[in-house]
Amino acid sequence: MYDEQQRPEHGPLAGFTVGVTAARRADELGALLQRRGANVLYGPALRIVPLSDDGELLSTTKELIGRPPDLVVATTAIGFRGWIEAADGWGLGEALVSGLRGVRLLARGPKVKGAIRAAGLTEEWSPTSESLAEVLDRLLEEGVEGRRVAVQLHGEPLPGFVEALRAGGADVVGVPVYRWMPPEDIAPLDRLLDAAVARGLDALTFTSAPAAASVLSRAEERGLLPGLLAALHHDVLPACVGPVTGLPLQAHGVDTVQPERFRLGPLVQLLCRELPAHSRTLPVAGHQMEIRGHAVLVDGSLRPVPPAGMALLRALSRRPGWVVSRPDLLRALPGSGSDEHAVETAMARLRTALGSPKLIQTVVKRGYRLALDPAADSKYAEP
Image 1: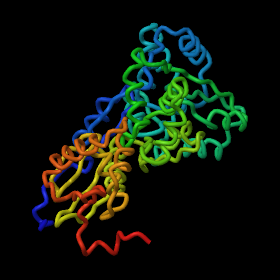
Image 2: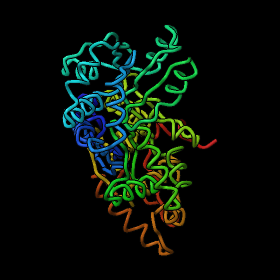
Image 3: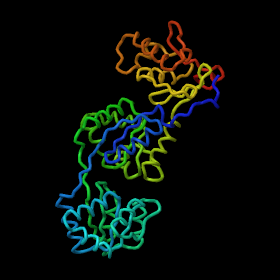
Image 4: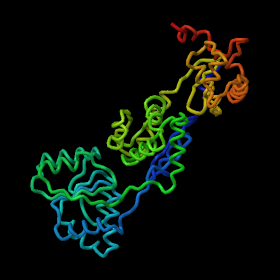
């Protein structure tokens, strides 16, 4: 009998596969996920192209030096640093920093504050929530009519932010420090999409709205959008670093989850809570069986299971203790044909992977069933 006190420790994401669409911080996010036991599949949805040679950023910088704004809103640390570095490259760095010293600087969060101070400047205010919505509320409450406001962009759309400032009477100047472009190699993103549609992922993470939009656009190009949306609705958890990131998904009716703090660490912590909470634990043949994405915990011991075996196990677990026929199991197998021998082969491999053949019983001439403990029969009985 399983002893709870003897349960080995595994990472909270052990047995789950998580897709990463990020480009700039993919390695950092992937490392955080793998440290907690997840299998990570990468498919960068975008690449970020610096605009150090871009005429638009150069002309905007010259314009702001010649006619400084009343207020600058800095939204990202990498974007603000990139702006200063680009200006340095044009020989305008000193003039830009000097002009910004006489300007009110608002920073969205602590990382942006660090970038501002690294440039020798000081922010006037930063919201505790790290939210642009709070920045907007403050500005509108103060009143922006007739004021010139520079907003440092970072490739991200800022829905409603710029429009609300202009509606309040502000003269808004966008500072486009980076530009989003499609990935140079589209194959990893296609593999990620295929995995999501095939339910080979348990969660798909997004760290920017443009990345979310790019994933949806690529899925549509390949004719996979209905399948992707169905997966995100039911089987693949869409996890976004913040509410703005999830807007393209929400426009397609997909509900997303976000951490309270819009950072990678809290995003991973959210997955550590959400994914295990949706896994199923059953008392089977005197053991505790927890069914996860691509593995099973048997008495706390992690057992990787091949995709065909997981398909069979999920079919059996939908009606724990009840017999599932070979034809029904054959239909559950990915890419199955008409030969029921495929069920027997996959079942043999599943039993081997689980490490205990008694967990699944063969019912002669009928099919297979999970050997649900008798005490659990009433709980899982069919109405």
